Image (tube, rainbow, N blue to C red):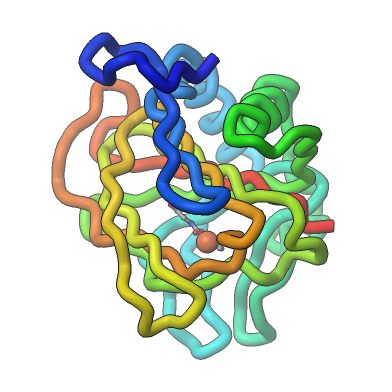
Length: 216
Ligand code: MD6
Ligand code: FE
């Protein structure tokens, strides 16, 4: 369980409240990281990582796959959730009990009880990959939070406001960290700065991010 008073140096998970309905759960996923990573490898063997194209025609630098009953997808026709992997026309791999329980427990630790995601977006960042500022607004119900799990190489997360031009806070997201945002912060702009070169003992030269959502 997240402990507000534990120190990060002790390697114990601890919760940091960063604003209304925004909580950074330091090290929340560290104990399960190896099992998570194994599952992610197996998911990517069924639904391969791919560079998606934005509606504007840009190829994203991150590589993406999904699991769950819905997967996030983007092409010239827009951003959306789809029940099947458009590359294989097969359903996305199922969301395992390990993934579901991690997402629900993290949401609860951040004050969002009863979160049951139906979509888990998996992003792979190699050094240089980034994600521009955006809002997550393809989901049907903005009452559910977003739960974002970081594995592997560290990244600098940008957390802005409700307008693209609002000032941005920079957060370091390390291996095992889980960031949860919802409520009045659910539609805040966010993004990821280019990942710096490096090596991580579990993932090698990659950052993996899982984002759990209720797409609806
Ligand atoms: C991340 N990803 O990869 C954060 N949002 O660390 C996102 O914020 C995100 O990858 C909406 C759609 C796709 C994404
Ligand atoms: Fe997002």
